[in-house]
Image 1 (cartoon, rainbow, N blue to C red):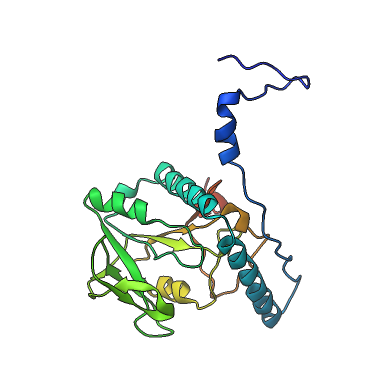
Image 2: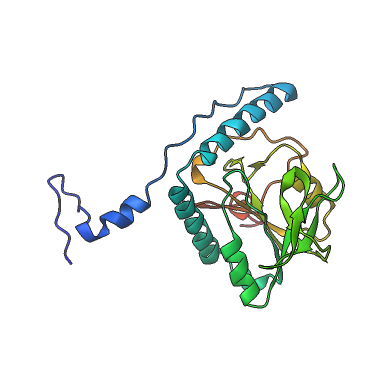
Length: 237
């Protein structure tokens, strides 16, 4: 089908593509205040807490169909941007408070013969363990009432898909504030490849990273893929 130019000289979209384009529309962004300039850690911490509350309330308030559509877009972008078959074991998360649901992606990985682990807080303030998960296994409730595998079968992910509350273009993530992923990554040897997963509307100018904040290798959203390698290319490039 030929596209006819509009009066402005630009080509308009044919009617058959309008539903597709409308489905790609972004929901209104949450109203997060800019971070304080040159602030002390206590001021940054307070700003992070307020930003976290705003971002969580925004995504929980999304229409369920919109959230499902965004989740599907993120999963497809993950499939397109990285060869998941390179990784024997991937760590995902059980979605809570409006997080993107990756269980469809996990089922695909299991069908190809891979393994999947869910994070489990065994001791408060310590790195998490990843316990083997597959659909239909017995589950129980862990910290914050999050479902976890009932049986402790520890796996060691080569790839972590990490939930984001917010993020910035330097591939730092804003999480829930407990520091569990930062502690887990700091203790991991070797460190797994880490992809932060979130909504594009949750992007921030900066999270005001601190020495304890560990950047992701990539961040994948419903609209973009950000890579730390692009920000810090190898020497000589």
